[in-house]
Amino acid sequence: MYRVVVADSRTARNGRAIEEIGIYQPKEDPSVIRIDAERVAYWLGVGAQATEPVVALLKLTGDWQKFKGEKDITSKVRVAPPKADHAAKYEKALKENLAEREEEEKNPRPKPVVAAKVEEPKAEEVVAEVKEEAAPAAEEVKAEEPVAEVVETPAEEVPAEAPAAEEAKSE
Image 1 (cartoon, rainbow, N blue to C red):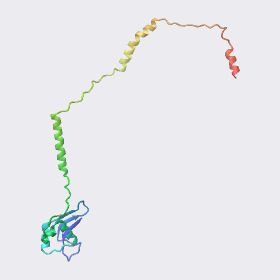
Image 2: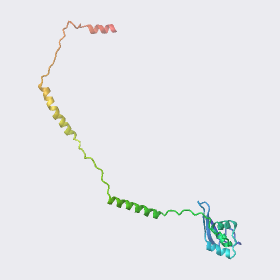
Image 3: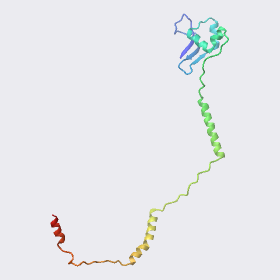
Image 4: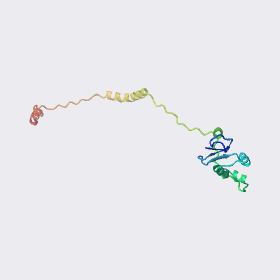
């Protein structure tokens, strides 16, 4: 950032200034050039001599052409768009939110239909039902007499030492 100042030519370049009449910020996009046109006209009118860099800035703002009496005194300085005011952004968002709430109150959305909850039977109830269903079947089984089949094989058909003999042969 540079300051545009009015200084006495007999003082040091970085010495004490008489008056600050503007600023120049070249690193901004677009560059910031703010110069007080009334104070520039006064100082140039009383005989102040502008340096080359200051003359270039004054030509961009149109102040140099005005001082010299030229016809084209329009400013050629590009102006950055104004930055958004945070308070204004907040107020806008708040108004939109309030408008949405009012709209919902006027036209409420239908609530979604929820299916009735089906309760699952408890484990004890299930066990009792199973026992009730199984009871008639168990009674039917008890009513029938158990049948045991005993099959007798004659001793003559099965040789007594046959398994032992087969084991001896395999060794």
